[in-house]
Length: 395
Ligand SMILES: Cc1ncc(COP(=O)(O)O)c(C=O)c1O
Image 1 (cartoon, rainbow, N blue to C red):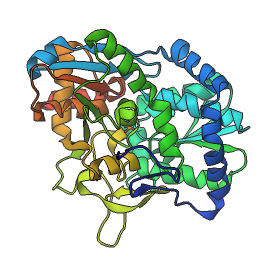
Image 2: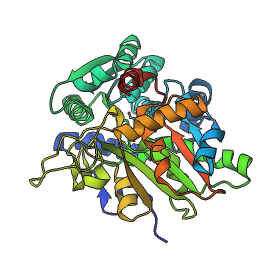
Image 3: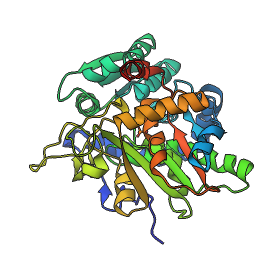
């Protein structure tokens, strides 16, 4: 049977691998050799799951959204990652990787962040575990997600604004990699999504897989079967989507729908819809789809949502798209904004702008009345209030 899981060399079909500068070879090898040993160790699992329960507040609820269901004529459950401590799914991965870093004897933690949720999650866990923390963030994102910058600083992290490129997630990642090259011995780089060289995409997917592990149990209790007809999630690099689909990847009864950021529209030149627009290339150490020009130069992406504003995509998702295991929809800024207001009015939940892209895919679907849909609300909208208020004032 075809499998959509990673293979031994870190590839999902033709995507993945580790394309890294010589200076990082030892760090990435050290990680590759250790990550499964550590993560699969019962002591690690015990500490990880205890923290997920008592510190993060897991399991996150699987909430039957009645009014949303009525509107779209099916049964829609929301997986409420927005209710986690720090407000998004990113904390699941941050806890896991920082526990791993400690076991590998690393004393300094670095991270990149776009929307700031991964930065806040990393700074939070570093405060908890008394570790030095440096977060790289594009200057554009520092400005549009300033509440999260203030949180990171209060938590004791140093936030470094990055002024190269269009000053967003790609540029922050470049800078974090540069830092890692300068401090390979004592520093651990916590990547916030299913991107980067092997083993990061697989490691982040495993740490986020608690989401689909819980969905299985919760659906069994609520529906008497442990699988839905549809799983829906937004994709930036792909971590909340990977967590949502992890335990269903090879279960073909379950349809997978992923929403990427269309920006102003995929034909406008102002988009971050990597799967629609990208070609095979290498970005941040991984062979995947990349938005690039004819000469192979990476193009600047655009999305209103800082967390989806990235010209690459996780290799797992590139493969799911290539093999047509997943349906990929590009959701534009205004469709996501509309969907955010709709969820707020119908269910009293203000979603993160990233999650609003998954919600924006709902009107494009054709559901049957007895379809069971699980859609992951990856984060809450507190950080996006300025954008929401501005949009409201204009409409
Ligand atoms: C709330 C939220 N959802 C989704 C994302 C996108 O990341 P990923 O595709 O890794 O889930 C981000 C990234 O910052 C985020 O903050």
